[in-house]
Figure 1 (cartoon, helix red, strand yellow):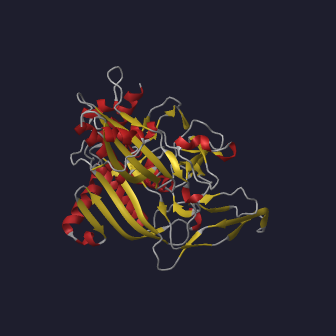
Figure 2 (cartoon, helix red, strand yellow):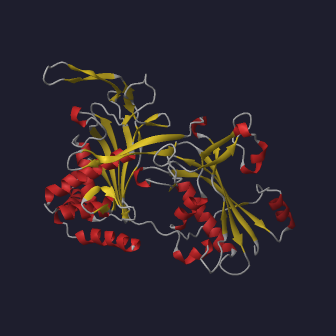
Amino acid sequence: MKNGRIILKAILENKSPMGIGSGRGDRSDRDVVTTEYTFDNNGVILPAERFLEGNKENIRQLPFIPATSFMGKVFRQFDPKVKKYWGESEVNASFIDCSDILLTELPGGSLNTTEIRDGIRIDSSKGTVAQGAKFDYELLAPGAKFGLTMLFRVEEEGLANYDVALKIASDIATVIEKGIDLGAKSTVGYGRIKGSATLYEIDFENPAHFQQWINNDLFQKKKEKATVSLLLPHSDSFEIVATFKIKNSLIIRSYSNDPKAPDSTHLKSGGKNILSGSSIKGALRGRAERILNTIQTNQDKTETILAGLFGDVEKENGNKQKVKKDGYTVSSRVFVDEVLIKEVKEEIQTRIQIDRFTGGTVDSALIEEVPLFPVKDKDQIKNFRIRVADAKELDKGLMLLLLKDLWTADLSIGGEKAIGRGVLEGVSATVFDGNATYTLLDDLKDSEKATVLQSYVDALHNRENDTDYQERIDKYKIKKL
């Protein structure tokens, strides 16, 4: 084919909450981006080409995925030698047309498409919320479906030839089917998108094809994906996948606007109990700081390692609670997922506050909360995942020590740790280290495999590669200048 189009159509679903900010703060500190949709009389979303068929009563503002967010994330996964296909300033326009990705089906069929999450920052020296570090943000609930259409131009000469267009379209289809993270806070499990994609082709020199193009009738022109890929090879990562039981109880507080509801309940997403990625990562970072401070006394080295591994933002001099508006940001190399919590019971507990002078109850200090309690002999938390990109031996050793603390009920997650909540017990874990796989605890009995894992912990104590972390931070500083 010398002149035509390769067309990609896909149905996407967000497997986890997604937050693509709009720059507004009407409903939270950071609202999701929205656009107008119309519905028919049965409550079904009309496609964009039928927008005018609706009436004003059936128009609603709902979230969507901007094409810029999708294309920007996909672009970074390709070999730079084909970047001109996306277009270069003052050289050539893009050969790809991508529509904004609009909702086709609401999550769970509900009109309540978004949820508000609370966020805090913990002062690691005190273990309490840092002053002024309370915020909230809006997320699209999981389970929404979107329609994606992409057009890849094919021209007789130049970069936009048939083979290149087919390879790029095929690779994007592969990325969609494997999953891609979009929007903010992807390192804590937000924005996971997966779907199914189909390729079609239209040859403009074929009159029958051209007529089908005009009639938007593509179903007879399916095209198999190319077998040669232009995607960059994935960097080696270190990944831990584990299963845990809840030892006593667990609560990540969520508050209701209903005055008759309990004061706090466990956090839900899409109506299901979850272990939030932000709670997991916050607990891991806090314990990592304690481990590093235990094995060495140089606080600056600890902060450098944490910033190079977990990410950081530049703070104002002398005030670590105030973030500089134009400061540099170091991205995290540690990724976690939100995890569904199953096999639990929700029970209301009533608590009081005691006056330490009189020994009686403080007036009005009656609190109702709904923590989660485990069902006996069941596993509550499965597919608990920690992944480190471009992992060094020091990183691996630190992650293994964090796993050990979780496994042995020494590291708790969530709220009310002081009364025993949030403690987990290890059931099983698998460590993926490049091409090697370790199953715990069985492989610890293998002296050769145990020696490899111990070498990572030894590297943490030796700390021979501290300069790598500072060099990574310096790169982000230079980019900001």
